[in-house]
Figure 1 (tube, rainbow, N blue to C red):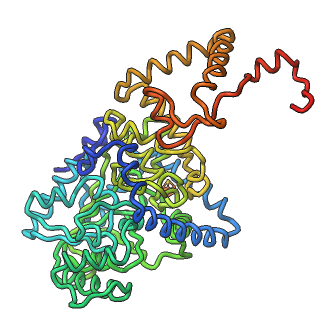
Figure 2: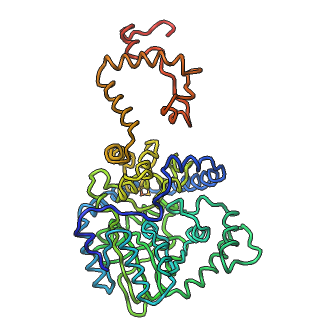
Figure 3: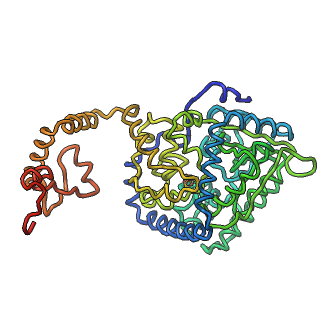
Length: 493
Ligand code: SF4
């Protein structure tokens, strides 16, 4: 079906079916941080990528101007999204492609499955795509009797390992070489005998395995990094060349794209094709940048379909603070600097979008009704490192704070927390009550604190001290000290 209704029926939240039912962030993170091997793999990978990115960015004198240009282009598109979507549809259709509109994951999955079935094929090759992970496409196609083969090396590792991606750019970042060799030996039907864990051997095994798929596949499915509205040109950037094979060899190409991926004109690519590679892989230029406009006789796929996916994006757009999350170009720089992600890893976020961007994107696109989505805005220390590195200046901490308020208002009911917050508000509204509370805390310190630290708080407050000490309240509050001394320094004080 064509899903024009997605544009006309107004905001609606989407779903990311493959991840629903996962535990809330604190539960999942607790398990992850106790896995020393996982933490080691993550620390090594993120430290390396982070250092390289910093060097690549420092090479450009006009990085700040580029970043501002990226922000402005994205904000302009979001402001006029309806206009640019209509223009894109007109241009893609005019160039011989077919545009489909999907209101949510279910509609997008159905559209893709029906398109594949119409070709008579039962296998597709895939370019790495966050949008298709978001809609759980591989799982849906499998239910429909269609096998999807991931062709990006890291995605292949994840797929063969029956695993889930844990990083936007390096989905198998939680795996090391030995893990990968074991996965290949177990699940790759044409694995070479005596495979070792040398990177060259592993890459060669994957290359041979994938080559056969590229040559036999008649249908490919891709995501889209950028869509140029005034020409109908689609852009995919990648590092391995697998994407280019998928985009050129098969007879039918189906691309699934979030509606926010538009840039107005080709000139705007100049900005993003500098911002993206330096922020993601720390490269000056992307190794493979594929662009195509509709279909051309004798060159590339003969049938091209573009599926425009809403899945909660118009609901996100409706929030004047939260909408900035739609500027994201999926570079993953915010993951690599986040102290929470670097310890907990991507699986703890219960979404295809891990790390700081996932913590603001998933609860907006899915709503904050589930335990996992209500927990994500709190999966941050609000240190601001994510904002500093973001190439399109998404103020992630600002959105996190906004979402925390939404969780309190609309999220799962937590009666104890509400009573505690109401009591705190009642106390803080009155100087007299605050002074009494401070005096009570100072007296309690003798009972609960040892050596200036509280190691275990009683009752439900114990959750705070489960993983950290709390500082003991001072023996005298600032207000009491001021009242006693008038602010004068005390001898020996
Ligand atoms: S939020 Fe910014 S830093 Fe994070 S993935 Fe998106 S564009 Fe990159």
